[in-house]
Length: 137
Image 1 (cartoon, rainbow, N blue to C red):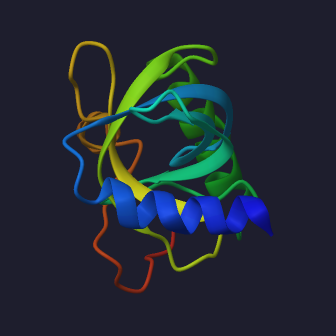
Image 2 (cartoon, helix red, strand yellow):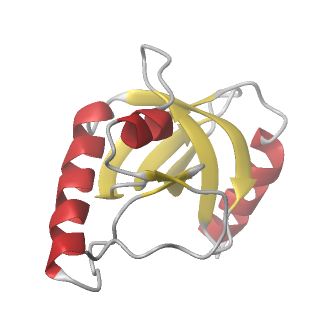
């Protein structure tokens, strides 16, 4: 319960921040990872789920073999773009529709918007909250 409250507060606090550093702990799928958020006062919020804003990637538990294969590749690629142990910055943080997760633009050390990279590489699609389109052929 304490972690959920911390994540909700993070979403409220960070929406006013320019950027917040996050150390990548592990990759969940092509558009979500878990990280440890480092706040300005040296406080650390551990194990925050961060979903990349404005991008949708295939689901690991997809509806067809094609989607599952694409999802595995998307997860691998996200891990290459933001490796475990690296520090990224999150901006425009908002609480997600799922409690305990935030949505944010994620930037790597080269200041690339990782969601935009996934869309440009055709690994993900632009997404703004509408009903998800199928990844099955």
